[in-house]
Length: 134
Figure 1 (cartoon, rainbow, N blue to C red):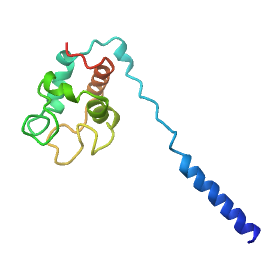
Figure 2: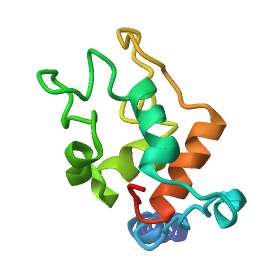
Figure 3: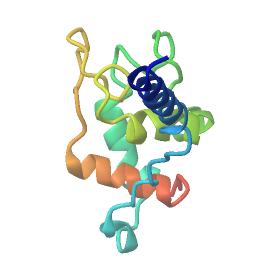
Figure 4: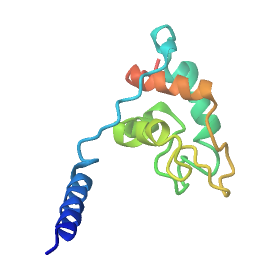
């Protein structure tokens, strides 16, 4: 084999190895909660219920009898979904994903398509505080 072919094979092998390890250890840092969480007293009953009623528990979504998972009409019925893999993941972590982030940006979504920044901050603080009810 010529030196040029060997060099090309070697560089290709190095490139292949770099692809195998490039993203396996990369991890995005956990987003910092908004600064207002230090001073804002947030709870389901004080602020969150209104946000959920307006954005999540609309007549076609997150109510008993709809296709959306979970009944979000009361704290007791939403409580099983208040986990890292459920509520936080879809509302906070996937916020900018038009298909998975909640509320969804689907054309057929009859409700709000995005949370306001204030609503997002309140929900972030609520999650950070451990989902208090009162």
